[in-house]
Length: 428
Ligand SMILES: *[C@@H]1O[C@H](CO)[C@@H](O)[C@H](O)[C@H]1NC(C)=O
Ligand SMILES: *[C@@H]1O[C@H](CO)[C@@H](O)[C@H](O)[C@H]1NC(C)=O
Ligand SMILES: *[C@@H]1O[C@H](CO)[C@@H](O)[C@H](O)[C@H]1NC(C)=O
Ligand SMILES: *[C@@H]1O[C@H](CO)[C@@H](O)[C@H](O)[C@H]1NC(C)=O
Ligand SMILES: *[C@@H]1O[C@H](CO)[C@@H](O)[C@H](O)[C@H]1NC(C)=O
Ligand SMILES: *[C@@H]1O[C@H](CO)[C@@H](O)[C@H](O)[C@H]1NC(C)=O
Ligand SMILES: *[C@@H]1O[C@H](CO)[C@@H](O)[C@H](O)[C@H]1NC(C)=O
Image (cartoon, rainbow, N blue to C red; front, side, top):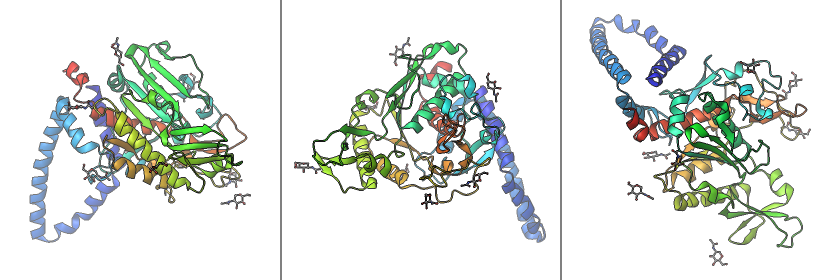
């Protein structure tokens, strides 16, 4: 019950925040009352309106009492992942102040790496922690840790990608730990510490029998050190038609969340002698965009052939915008407030490629299209409050912070996706 109580009050809060639109309506209504006919019509409308809202209120009562109805309500109205549903695209919205955030304290979570714990690294302004994402036409269900722990029971959640995936992995673990009494029951399966280059980290929630894993695979496809081409500047290749050699480990996950993009830049490829290879042929002239697209197609056919859609929920997170003022000089200033404009950063050719490729897959892949919402958040980067205070960083994000909201989106999807499973049957 507490779930729905919370989400209702959450809705009310959102209404107060977005009240300007309601206000507009009441301001314009006196115009109608001048002409008596229109006025009569208007009164009739109000009467109908109040009858409708009476039934809505009754309906609301039922929703409150009967979780079953709430479920279908959520399914039909709240969640849409492909962006075309005119009623609700959860990625189209705005940031609103919400003082109930943040949802955890990074200093009390052993799985936040030092470099992302901005408050502990000396950030004093904490306004950046108080924002909630409000989709235009609906609400995201508020993250309910007890509900999420039950949803994930007996499952395997796997993040694959670069450091942005590692951040979201850390965020999810910390969000979930707020609902676990015995913190010692949550541990890394190999006793490993979080480092930047580590290939695998797996955190087990032993009392709930699930693990939240991270595989570092910055390009998703296979990277090979090789001089076999006899071209001096070619020191390594990305085999664009073969997924990373650790990909077999991802197959039996229940939830699979991918990202890639941050490493597809000249400095991290050609600059270090890394070129592309397709069908055993070196492709020296291939552009990064074409290569990224080819890698994504390899990924999508791998998903289509290896993943059982009855078991695994697949997500791909789109490009995470950065906010450098000059990347070559590594200059940037983190702001105290989100930007009021996205300044063109709401789109990215990497995100477009993900949206297009995901659209033509057999196995449904949910695109977490977080590029627009993140484009506003110049205030959410680690800046100088990282583990290297001599260099500003406007790529990575503070924890708690923006990645928590990405996880709320995953939660909202899983919340609906698993609603017909044993979790609910057990409770009823
Ligand atoms: C979204 O889904 C609807 C039907 O579910 C489909 O008609 C539409 O083409 C999809 N749009 C995108 C952008 O994937
Ligand atoms: C977070 O936890 C640390 C350690 O328990 C504490 O010192 C700090 O005040 C807490 N911060 C917030 C914002 O509550
Ligand atoms: C733990 O989860 C696995 C599936 O991931 C399942 O096979 C096993 O039976 C579960 N163990 C218990 C004690 O429920
Ligand atoms: C890959 O190479 C083989 C042999 O050179 C060729 O027959 C085949 O058409 C190539 N496939 C693609 C997709 O280019
Ligand atoms: C998935 O479930 C459906 C319906 O239960 C079944 O027909 C289908 O064969 C299953 N697919 C796989 C790959 O197991
Ligand atoms: C960034 O700094 C470099 C080196 O000082 C300079 O050449 C370049 O024009 C700057 N770029 C922008 C966008 O300001
Ligand atoms: C960043 O802030 C510092 C100090 O406020 C200022 O001197 C500098 O010009 C700012 N840099 C940019 C790129 O806005």
